[in-house]
Amino acid sequence: MTLRNKLNLDNAVELARAEERISKQRAIQLWQSDELKNFRAGTFETLAYIHKRLFEEIYYFAGQLRDENISKGHFRFASALYLAQAVLSVEKMPQESFEQIVAKYVEMNVAHPFREGNGRSMRLWLDDILRREIGRVVDWSRVDKNDYLQAMERSPINDSEIKALLAAALTDKINDREIFMKGLDASYFYENYYAYRSEELK
Ligand SMILES: Nc1ncnc2c1ncn2[C@@H]1O[C@H](COP(=O)(O)OP(=O)(O)OP(=O)(O)O)[C@@H](O)[C@H]1O
Ligand SMILES: [Mg+2]
Image 1: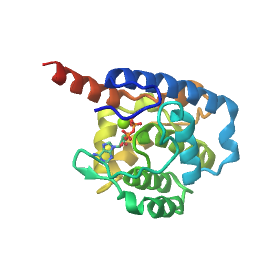
Image 2: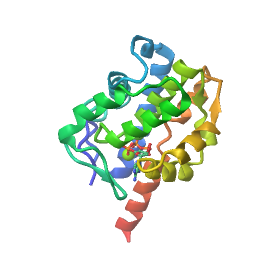
Image 3: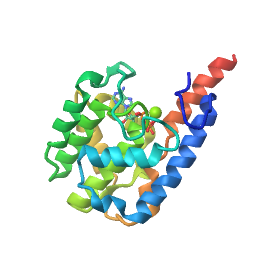
């Protein structure tokens, strides 16, 4: 049930732990190096670069569009056949205001470009847009995880919940590393896998 990975791990919990540890180290480097300055905020190229930096030691598909169809809960993300077109139309969406930026984030989530790691790479991508366009970032420590996930599940139909949730957590502390790193927590991932594992052990 685990994705094929460069670490040759076949235990889901071990993979989740390694993934979180490595991607957080890479995110710190990304943050310290200022590499994103060389990329335009809000493009797919930037998102793909973030994804590659976080996951290239773990997954062969890091930074690359998925070629499988995937779903979560009851929601089926963009068809792999049309994914390249979908991400290009999302990147053309405007990003001048908070409202526009979150609408764009929601559409990129509907596309879900990668086989795994969309949530984490997209939260950094979102913060990069917010920081450069409106001088704010999300303080993810102030976003309740369950509320976030529910709002994201709802967002393809109605994005008002996710907008309200993120608006309430905006901060102007754009140079705080701890705040940047909070977006990298993979707690749902953990919870899901622990749940999965305990069923397996029954
Ligand atoms: N049912 C759903 N409908 C729409 N979007 C969803 C749904 N469930 C989850 N999401 C979004 O997908 C993201 C998870 O995607 P994925 O598993 O590829 O990334 P991740 O980095 O492993 O996850 P996480 O966000 O949990 O750290 C969530 O953060 C959320 O934004
Ligand atoms: Mg995941």
